[in-house]
Amino acid sequence: MKALQMVDTKSQYLKIKEEVDSAIQDVLDSAAYIGGKAVQEFSTSLNEYIGSKYTITCANGTDALQISMMALGLEPGDEVITPSFTYIATTEVVALLRLKPVFVEVDAKTFCIDPDAIRKAITPKTKAIVPVHLYGHAAPMEEIMAIAKKYNLFVIEDNAQAIGCDYTFSDGTVKKTGSIGHVGCTSFYPSKNLGAYGDGGAIFTNDEALAERLRMTANHGQKVRYLHDLVGCNSRLDAIQATILNVKLKRLDSYNAARKEAAAFYNKAFEGIDWITTPYLAPYSTHVYHQYTLLLNGVNRDELSAYLTGKGIPNMIYYPVPGHKQKMFAEFGLEDVNLPTTDWLTERVISLPIHTELEIEQLNFITTEFLNFKNK
Ligand SMILES: *Cc1c(COP(=O)(O)O)cnc(C)c1O
Image (cartoon, rainbow, N blue to C red; front, side, top):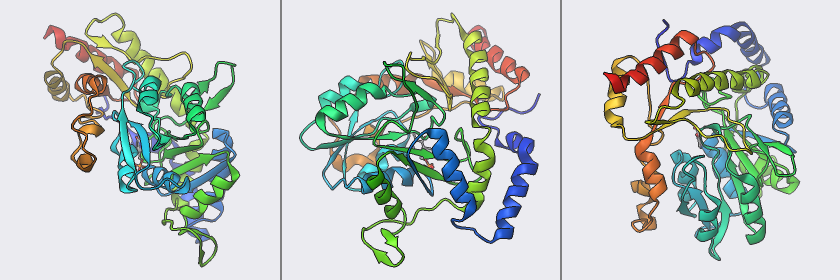
């Protein structure tokens, strides 16, 4: 059996090696290393895939979030409602821009931000909500957009883990996550569902004026070269990454289908086991399984993790310390923030290998050994 990995980007690459290598060679030959045809083609294809009006590529997913908050004109002291149960990038940029992160609860089933918690957290200073489509499952966008409309707030979707995920509205309309909020952000970090072989990110919007501000913000605040109208930053997707992403975007749906198949194997093996809760699927969302994350009931997680590691089965805790307990936010005085669901989930989640190259033999081994933990 091939050694197990959380993500197997190497095996995936080997299957598309010729096409990728030749695309990279074309970029090298063109000498257009920044911008140019590859970046243009990729943003056009991605824009079409997501179903957004405008796509702005940038250097990584963290920058995508930062540029969004800058371009929306958020100002120091403005409050941004975000889940605590997420990767740090979501909330770090809030603090970096001297905005105030307001950490709220997630739903215990979907792991995504809870609309009731959003409503309770709104104050006259609230300016934006940042739902995260965690692990590849959509946050309840229809309700979030309704809240945002009522209170005149911006919605910035953190779609770094859910590219390709479909959201179905109550009238039957289907949209890709990332195209629903005022702005959507994503990441092409190698392990993401659409991963480059380096860093990359993108921002989506349907608002023309905002698209222009996003583009300017990512490019030193300039629209006309050497005329800088805004304070921006320098955040670019390079041409080599863009050309790799062009090759991979065509395969994204089949990559997500492969993840779903692996997840279905896990789900079946773990069905009816009282100490395991398998991932929930809300009626409005598909799942692209960026992570396959279980909830453990009455099991010592440290022991299980060590046992799995001993068997050569990689496993991870996403994420071991929630945002509201991170020292980086000390200045915001979060001692009184009480998020029992977030804490409860943090203590009980465990993620198993999930990627496009998992073989039946590997899945069999993982699930058999996992279940053996209780009988050992
Ligand atoms: C990966 C990720 C990011 C940041 O993306 P980078 O490209 O690593 O900067 C932001 N939010 C979430 C939820 C992520 O998983």
